[in-house]
Length: 233
Image (cartoon, rainbow, N blue to C red; front, side):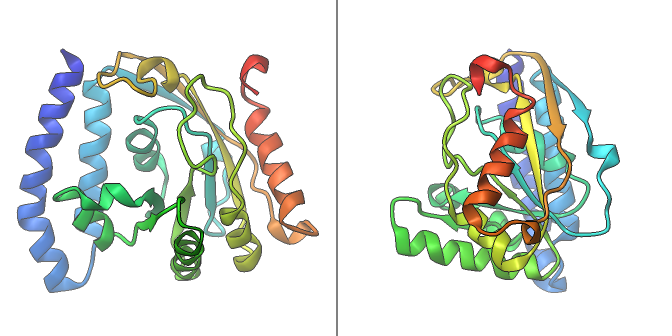
């Protein structure tokens, strides 16, 4: 019942927001009002679903730089849960199919979200370059470097593209570990169950301290793993 109420809320709130948000953004050239309204809608939907969260480490994160947040990915609830909790406007690398959805697709383009096609290497490289340009403008970036959701909660090997981006831009990486969403909305499921989630923000990792991309990837992987139970590492 809670999941159906969440879907109903999103189905009503998104078109209403689009009615004023799209014209306002086009007229002013500013996405902020629609962006933060959209995140409020997403966060409230997660709450309606009965999902509660505990944040660990976010309050200790220095706001002296923009960041690339890299998180494990075990559920479709991860993005609408995590993005509204980040303290500043963030761009997200999102699979290209989602940009075909009405309302959501155009809204993500207005917000500088980056479509990525992982089945096409050249297109994926182009997406990484586009993301680098957005990051250089001063926006934070959220990446799920596994590239897909894990079916059993175990950490999958990370894709390399976002680490190229970090090395090229020099922007610090904040590893993030999400715990619990795999039980509330597992891959292949449509309806979410209520429950508690923990989100761990680890200490920033400076790409400039590493000799190459592989060393950086190992450090980020180890950081994300450090908060996972042993059987899911």
